[in-house]
Each structure stands twice: as C-alpha cells, then as structure tokens.
Amino acid sequence: MLHLTQRKANINDVKTIIELLLEDDLGKTREHLDLSEDSAYLKAFHLIDQDPNQYLMVIENSDEIVATCHLTIMPSLTFTGATRMQIEAVRTKEKYRGQKIGQWMMDAAVDYAKSRGASIIQLTTNKSRPRAKNFYDHNGFENSHEGMKRYLK
Amino acid sequence: MLHLTQRKANINDVKTIIELLLEDDLGKTREHLDLSEDSAYLKAFHLIDQDPNQYLMVIENSDEIVATCHLTIMPSLTFTGATRMQIEAVRTKEKYRGQKIGQWMMDAAVDYAKSRGASIIQLTTNKSRPRAKNFYDHNGFENSHEGMKRYLK
Image 1 (cartoon, one colour):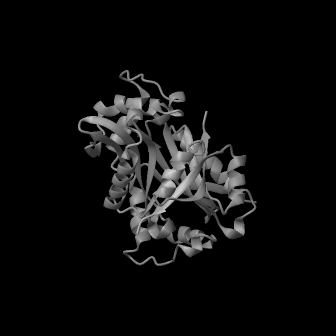
Image 2 (tube, each protein chain N blue to C red):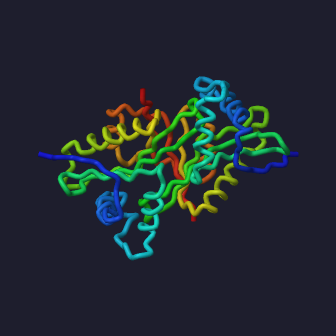
Image 3 (cartoon, chains in turn cyan, blue):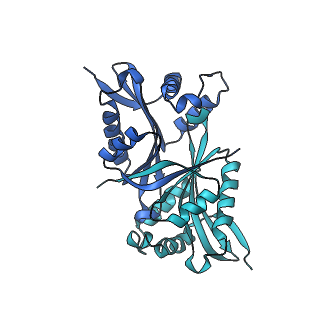
C-alpha cells in the first residue's frame, strides 16, 4: 500500500532526482552522476530553488522519493493575461511504475497550478513516448501543437 | 528600407502588443482591448516586467512596433543542468509581413538566449499554422515533441 506525499525538492534530493533521470531511455543518453561541488546540476538546482516561479516537485512513498516533475509558472499576456504552468522532467522510479504514481503526481501538479492561479497547463512529450502521450490525452490535454527544440552549440 | 531594433517592452507598449495579438486568426478569438486599470493584461505585464527570467521583446522599425515575442529563461536539471529558453506569443504586424521581420526577431531571440547561457530553445506552434512550423524547421528547430495544452476551468 502506497502512502504518497509531495514536497518541494531540497539540495539533498538532487542525486536521487538525477538517478531517476538516468533510469529513462532518453535520459541515460544525456545525464551523468557527477555531483562534484561545481557541477552544473548543483548550479541549476540553486537557480531553480531560488526562483519563486520554479517548483521542483518530489513525490515520496513514506521517506523514499519515487517520482519527480519540474513545474514553471509563466505569466503571459495571451489568453487575456493568463498565467501558464509548464511541466517538464516527469519521471517515476522504474520499480514503482504501474502503480498510478504518475496519476497521483499529475493531480498534485494540477492542484499546484490552481494554487498559483494558472489557467493553462502545458507540456511537450517526445514523439518516441506514445504511452506518455496517451497518459496526457487521458488527463485532458489537447494535442494541438507541435513541440519544437533547437540545441545551441 | 527597414531599420529594425529590439528592446524590452514597457507598460506603454501593452496596448500595441495586444493589437498585434488581436490581428492573429487564433488571437482574435481570445483577446480583447480592455485596458482599464485593473485589467488582467496590465497585471500580467507587471508580473512579466518584474521577473528577471521574463523578457517581453518588441521589435521597432524606427519608432513603430512591428513585431513581438515573449521569452522565458528556465533553469533545468535535465541535459546536465541546461538552461532553456522558451519562446511564446510570436507575432508580426500584418502590414509588415513578408519582409523577413520574423527572421530578424528569431535571430535577436537566439542572441538573447546565448547572452543568458541557454543551450536549448523551445517553443510550440499550433498545428493549424503550417507556415509557422516551416519557418521554425528552417531555423534549426527539431519537430521532436507533441505540444499539449490543458485549460483549467
């Protein structure tokens, strides 16, 4: 029986979050576990942690982190001055998959969006992840846009 | 002959920016020109203006605003602690289209991304805008993701 709670990540969680990113088929090609003092991960964590519009969420089962996502609040002029929330870096720990933890986390993310006055939630999902897309379809997301990325040298 | 410059928008530009949003086929179904004191547009402008990770860009030809886009800097853990820049609300004034102003603005946005240390630029484009998608293809964006939106009540 799972007992799930969510909270804002702290610096002691960074290693565990990177491990979750590394479990992923795409993530394992991009990430590594170097957390030396000047690591880009720790610098990025501090930027996220200090920004009131960033919420790096971890989901715990008892005291174990089992899932994570990164939420960004974005004020905008469009849609009559709507606040948007963007969801990135959604991951569930491999051995905990298939237990609806992703659904629990999505519901927690929606609650967070509402608490921040957001009226639009947006995300992109890699076209190589059809099951993820089905999950978002099921959660009321419209597949109305192309998601485009450009990598700078 | 165009003489284009870019700068951060100020509060006196908000009406002109809304007019640009209203010229758009999708935008005209979403926006209106109510800029009374307590307008959601002005509240949103102040949130954008005060946030160092938001840059609402206007492009001027001499002293006339001819295009706009909204840039958001997002620190992230993924891609080894990469900083991302998101582009939203890209619009060129109708009577100035076809003069490569969009290209000039994209180049200015890329310069801004580099000045902020971003290594990934991302955006979504509505599937009803094939010409916009072609423009982003041409500018080195990979169409690797589905862009999904959920509207909260």
